[in-house]
Image 1 (cartoon, one colour):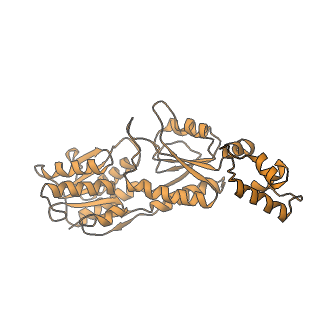
Image 2: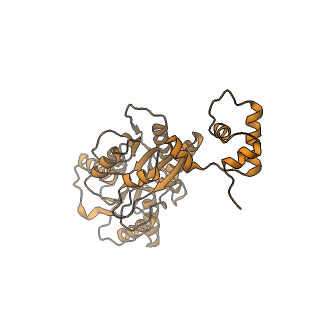
Image 3: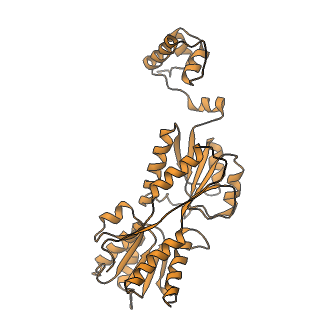
Length: 334
């Protein structure tokens, strides 16, 4: 069946195409009586007319589409949506956008494709970038001439709204908590540690806390890889079999920590009796883990909400929103 168009609606309602367009776009017009508006809306409903958003974008130069771009940590990999962080973030971002008449597009980037190219080809009204640490990528995003919000991103380019937590402070809080409990041989399990970014800063916080207690970080106690449940399990099994295994572990994400606890348990190592574990995020997983996970709480949903608000409020004064962190005590640290 042919998709009904503006002309079909106009004929059905007995008005001009321009009048239909005014009604659809809520354009003020003295010629639009309540009766005319009702006839057009009744015709739209009866015909099942759906506005062509692509055509509207061309006319208004506005797509009402926001992009959330998530860098892929490894080429050829899927985006890491197994990590509850992204679900919590996207749920809040999508809801906030929808309430304001916007839709969300989620994307990574194929090999050789920049995030600026993804945003440009989709005609986005604004872009949220999560976990961006590439200066050149950030410079290219500035050429888009649309609002950009960097979330948990540590590229040095200026001119962006930013939303984050104090990641170094979070790593420090977690490690110091283990030290205050009398633990001294503390491992750090994390995502890939580069020369900047979330994982780098949380590791710096870990090192700072150790230093305050006169302890030197040991390379043999740093384990970095993919932020996934599977890698956490692998590291749990590895730590269980180590000679001189640690008595505590700071894990940079709850998804890793839950996997770690399962890997330890599978090898007969008890949490927290044999090894204490502290995570980061305070996701739903931390509450359902056995034992429930002591962790650093960050308000991930508030990050998603704030990022969207910064895009759609058209605030030209650059904002740098840093959300607070708190420590949540549960049962994984003795």
